[in-house]
Image (cartoon, rainbow, N blue to C red; front, side, top):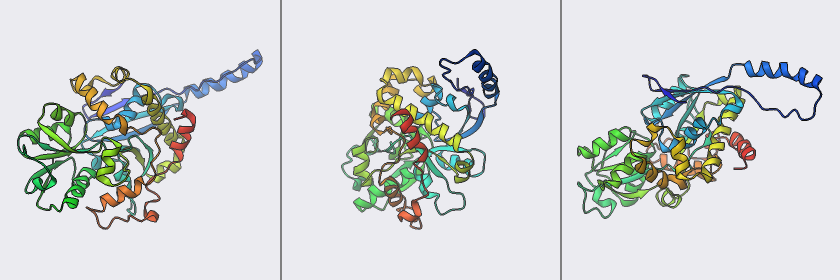
Amino acid sequence: MLQRTNSERFTVSFSFLRRRTLGAVSALAVAVLLPTLRVRASAPPARVRVAVGGGEGYALRHLPLTIATQLDFFRPEGVDVTWLSYPNDALALQAVQDGVADVGAMGFEHAVRSQGRSQAVRSLVLQARTPQLVLAISSRALPHYRTPQDLRRCKIGVNEWGGLAHAMVQRVLERAGVQEVGFVVVGDGAQAVAALRAGKVQALCHGGPAMARLERNRELRVVYDTRSLAGAQAVFGGTLPGSCLVAPPQFLQAHPARAQALADGVVHALKWLQTAAPADVLKVVPTEALMGDRRLFLAALGSVRESVSPDGLVPEGGVQTAAQTLALLDPTLDARPSGLAQAYTQEFARKAKQQFSA
């Protein structure tokens, strides 16, 4: 169903055909309806380009989007979705702002940071209710680690400068009164693993199966974990949303049906995930998502299962927690409720939740 091109694009095409219950109608009524159905069925599907941040197109934080695509949950609205993969969220956001993509799949923090700027975006449906990031230390470089004080003069790898992983580490260090720390941008999962093993960093703040692999091999030890609700609460002091779909306000206003189709597909996937067994997920996700190790994937899936949003809605207080955390790196960010009101909309997720009883 999904095909990767040399330009790292994933294309999924869906046909448009709504089922109608004709019931007990006359032959004449059927004859009248059929031409209409044929016209609708032959209409070209609406195209939506989705910029997926994080380098790993099938990262677990994008699992609902992957499930929705694999199980054809977008088809009822006739959406033709093109996946554009980018090394990090910042580049995916840039693609949306430049008009290369219509919608972005990325961390909720990017919707918050964009407010008050000329090219703001809004979150339209949530995939994860926590960031799914962990701060972990190298077992080889810091075998006697006890507290954040032991991170002094260490180099910590993050996926992008100024992103949520960077802000998460900054919050941990600030609470501990630690300042003498260096940050290194290590990119996606494979690059992060290589940086740790080469000794370029002594700690990592990252997410996904790559971290699960290092943890399983005892190459690192997790010391702060936002894959769980309690762990995220402990780090951020409140609820902080994770991955979501974002779009410019102009797109949401001009194409509300397309935005609703995306929200419907994601919330349908969230509903499916509520009862799906790990074996069911294995059958659905593409082989590439398993990173060549089914057991590793299952372990990583188990660690983030609680993080998956139940209904696509942004939890109460989530935008404020995100803004307060990001303000640690950007003091100019407007963390007032009035300045954050446009960071997200619940309109599409609410309708989808009602439709699928999520």
